[in-house]
Length: 256
Image (cartoon, rainbow, N blue to C red; front, top):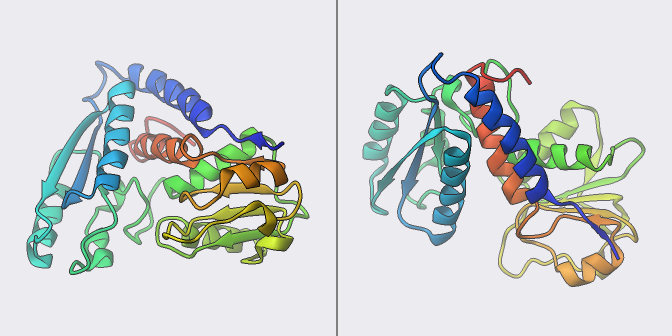
């Protein structure tokens, strides 16, 4: 039976540490403020935003949600994001996915680099940060002392939020990746599409399986893998914790 990579427990530890960092700045500076932009009322997006709001409340970060109708035009949304970018806040999230008629890349590019806690604007941030999903996965693997040396790694899915940032990071560090699940020692999955499921008979015995999008059949994977992240309680809570961490890094409350 596989060991569980408990992202929820680790996220709680990280948020507790970040809360202490923020408390030390109380009275020295204004509260940090994280702003989220949501278009429409997608239930899954609302769940993610509630989790981020909860993390903000716990750590002492102010949180504000700007919610716009599903039929908001590209032009109006661009103006609103520009307006929010110029306001007195410290971090901005544009919750994805956006409606199909919206050019998401254009909207994300309007987030000021110094407020881009999701690392999605395409701009270089100073200090440098990683995407929250990538940072969360790396932190989980580090916590459980799982390294990449001599390992075959498969990344499944090349999406904007999960797969592509992970693939880019591995390439930057000269670590070879493929999409061959069967031979991989470490499998990172971020497909998130109905009907796509990674089952135990698709993976190598004792493989490490990191599920960032609800892609795995936990029962069969638990019997075949060495470690796996559960859903819920795996990558999700860590992603939220890393949003708060990125906020602190960009505002120099935390030196990573």
